[in-house]
Length: 264
Figure 1: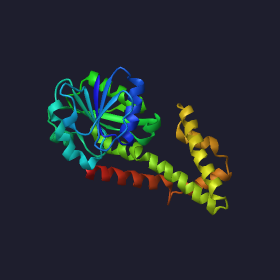
Figure 2 (figure 1 turned 135 degrees about the vertical axis):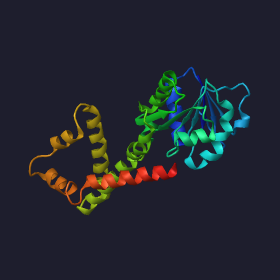
Figure 3 (figure 1 turned 120 degrees about the vertical axis):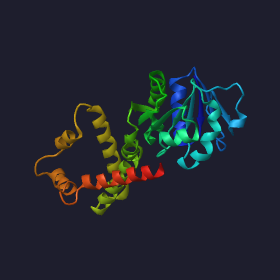
Figure 4 (figure 1 turned 45 degrees about the vertical axis):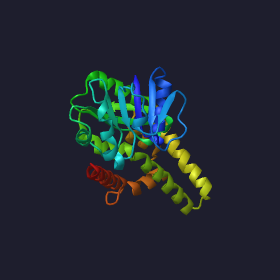
């Protein structure tokens, strides 16, 4: 496989790190005008004009910000063929957008990873246009699994919701740590201890959830909750029917979905 990565920011670095580990016999090239220190066994170029004339990628991966996609994508039209797949991880940019700036005959996959990919713990949902066959789908999932779990969907309409839940989701978890820390300080804890408790509680709970694949989140919650105990008292507030965490999260996810639609 010959793979061309466009953009070497945090997500690009995470992907490349996973690929170098999982696919050592492949050929990798990176295009990023600002990157300076590429990993071993890769080639770094400042622009597409610097690529060797004989470089024919099987995958072109766009790991750049949505705002620069308009100007960047058309530069790579020359690679359109039955042997090349274009994979984009730009939030909010749908397949129609990608087809408009490449070509309707291009083989295109849209994917949404999240930042835990940086430590190999991400999850990515991918979907493709009508030109993506089973082999291309399998190859794409193999690439995306280098940084965590990967799921294929034939329904592109869910991608804004995917972005809202998992793409943006790490920020919600970090906010939970932040708010638990502040609440602990408000209850009388030293800030350092409050943050240590909040952070490790989230980490440990996530590890427990991962280790309990066949147990629902609601059951895990119930297992921690003794009748009339301290946890139940706190959950009475968080799950209050007039002002509950579920409604707040629904509103947050809907806001992210709507922003995704506007980015499209």
